[in-house]
Image (cartoon, rainbow, N blue to C red; front, side, top):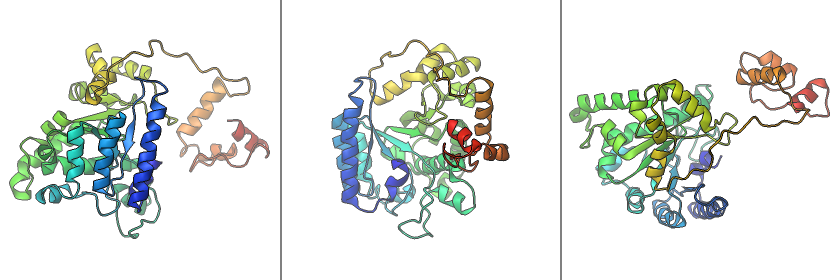
Amino acid sequence: MVIMYLPYAENDEGLDAFCQAYNDFLVDWCHEVPGRLYGAALLPVQSPVLAAKEIFRAKELGHPVGLIRPIDAQAKYPNSIRQAMMAGGGDFDEVFRAFEETGMVLGMHTFPAPGIPHPLGLEYVATPGDLFIRAGVDSQTFSFIHEMQVWLAQVLLSGFLDRYNRLKMAVFESNAEWLPYFLDSCDRLWKLYRRERGYSGDRLPSEAFKAQSVISFESDEVGVFEQWPDYENIGIWASDAYHHDGADVWSAMRNMTGAGVPDAVQHKLLGGNASSWYGIEPKVFVTDEAGPIERPEWFPQGPELDEWADLIAHPRENREKLKEIGIDPDNLAVIGSAGGGPQQQQAARY
């Protein structure tokens, strides 16, 4: 939830202290399993000076990635990248230079809109998710992908990556199946309107992206695996832990094999690309797939569990059935408590 709300913080010094405390905590947490866990640092992007300073400090702490949510929540962040490039990089030039100098990866992590009054006023739009909320649509449905597409369109059509040609970017939490068509569209626009609209850069958008960026995908993105030549050198697997729909690597391997992804490419997608991009020594920690989780006798199992999982997976279609067992289909929150009637007890049991 920090990624959702961090860009809306208004006190630069407080935000700086918060990010430093979190990044220090990451050191301790990752050292529980040295060589296996690595941190993605939070940055006080409301202040370019403080953000650049924390990039250098976090890199010294050993964090290979610095996270930035690609939105303009304070009317400070260069959401209009092209205008910033025309002004010599804008106020955030030193931030991007710090990423280049340290070699830290710029991790772009999207999120839904928070759905709260914006500190700068209700009419200020900070993220594409705000527009979906105003239209009565759950921002989570579209915000992850559209937030990233807005950012990348500006980056790729502005010459941003040519100005910062040593910058390494990673696209997180926005799926990946849309990328080939998106890059093709940017290339087409760049060729057609470069002189008319002032698009700049020495390379096609697709060339710049593939040279300086990677994108994360999850285990169920079969569309990625069916287009594996497009992702062979830029795809990095993500488990999406600890979300309830997070999947382990074994399901990714099964889906890749089913789509005909060569073993050598699977090696790249499932670790080789990531270890190279982050400068991490690859190590093997797990060699066998874990068996089914052992459940206590009272836990629903067999057909009963399958039926419940299907209800939860399709809340709109099963609204009435979910209400019958005491679960709110709009937020999947348990209604009542274990001390209530049979429906509440059944819901609490699940």
